[in-house]
Amino acid sequence: MNKDNNIIAKLEAMLFASGEPVEAARLAELLELDIESITKMLAHLGDLYDERQSGIRLIRMGGKYQICTREEYADDVRSLLEIKKNTPLSQAAFEVLAIVAYNKAVTKSFIEQIRGVDCSGSIANLVQKGLIEEKGRLDLPGRPLVYGTTDRFLRCFSLNSLDDLPDLPVAEESAEGSDQTSLFEGNAEGTDEL
Image 1 (cartoon, one colour):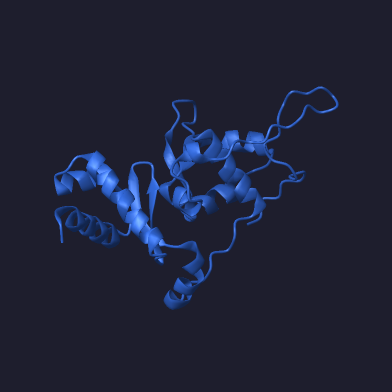
Image 2 (cartoon, one colour):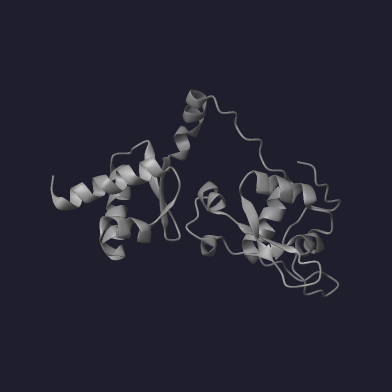
């Protein structure tokens, strides 16, 4: 086994054992290599999985890497592990998640201002599922919490970073001449049931 193959095997073992995303800088530090070499080797490892049509794949989220199961085998893995399929997100939860993702960091009141309804339930559900998290507090009266997306959000939606989100559709001006764009349609009553 040549030196590069040995390092690639070490990278694979480290990522497999971690089970969580690992920063390329951390891998470079541990293997005493530069980040550029590590990222090339990680790309090669990902290509090997793809060429073999392996049941696992290497995903990149920003500067972090993780080995995970390919989506097409998720049901089989769930069956093996006897994991119940997560209940799907409601329309309200998807709307809240989209607001948080596209605005990067927002308060509950900002979300509610856009949606026009209380979003406490959706926010709590998304935090519980690990898709959003508290990122801190604003220096305003009441010190409101700021929410942002998590690495799990990126993994679930197969995104490298929030920059990979698709562009929002541009709505045409309404007949009244309003220049406001609705981010979400079909939420006339806005129930927040999950």
